[in-house]
Amino acid sequence: MHLSPEAMLELQKADDFEWAQSAPEVQDNPEHFGKLVVVYKHRIVAVGRDREALIAKASQDVAIPGQHLVVVLVPRPGFWEIPH
Image 1: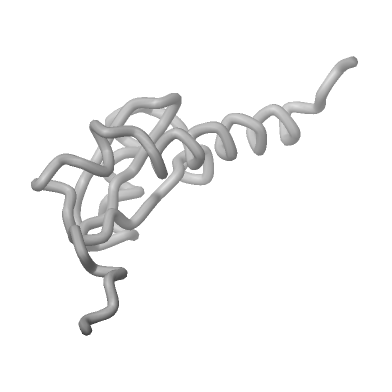
Image 2: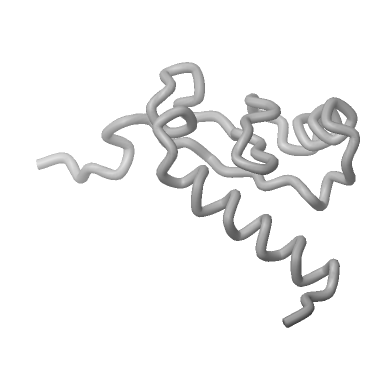
């Protein structure tokens, strides 16, 4: 089965997103808590709070278009817990 370049890109982004949601190097790093993490091919390429600036810098750093990057928000520990 031959996939189009667009389909391959979407598969890569879905894989990066799934990885970033559970990878300890993304989710368990205190420097990432409450920040956006930009991922490309299972590699962290930028961390910060300004999404547009992060994508622009990461895109330049890895020399690929910004639409190839995945951005995830890493919540602070306990953020989703409901106080009792």
